[in-house]
Image (cartoon, rainbow, N blue to C red; front, side):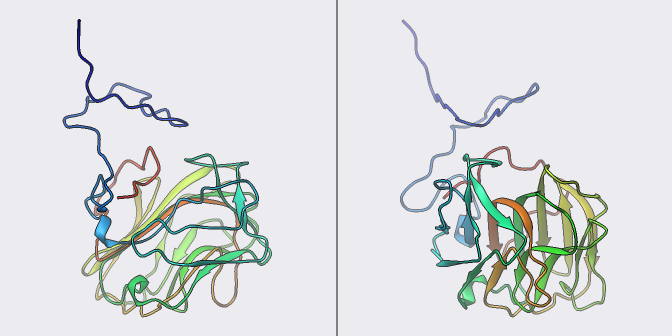
Length: 248
């Protein structure tokens, strides 16, 4: 005669690889109303889990915005690699990218925002762009295999990573801007910061997998991309997600 409470089974994730503090509250639940384990869920304006069947060209935005995502080139869902969920977005570096229509809700303006995603290069050759606010700001990997993110503040300063990336390895990338400061994180470690006045990022559309001009197409896999407008999620080093972002 006994009792069991709060049983959770997670497929595809080894949640605990060392000693840890047991949960202090019930495991988070996602409700139909949109409340759940993400306290900033109302500010999530794009959430691409990159999940689906192998070869599918359907990319679903799971945020409450429900943005229509358009595919270009041969970009597709692939089950060959994934960080979470058994699939990711595959970009071949030759014309593959995702785009959104013009939509005010995904334009940061001068507000705080956080863009984050998991990335795995198949081939690092040349400059590549995994994410850009079209015509306003991009996260661009330069030819030296580090990131350079300019024009996020009104100053001439750029966010530049110190990690030298390698092929066939997953990295968590985050750019988080608050009021007067922005930071670039690789695997939860702050590698660059700039301060000043927030630049007006008035773009109202997004490219995933390319820049505006030059295109700088991305070659590899992207998983679990989340855009939060109005929230500076990361102001110090953090532990990268150990599971897919919650929907709710």
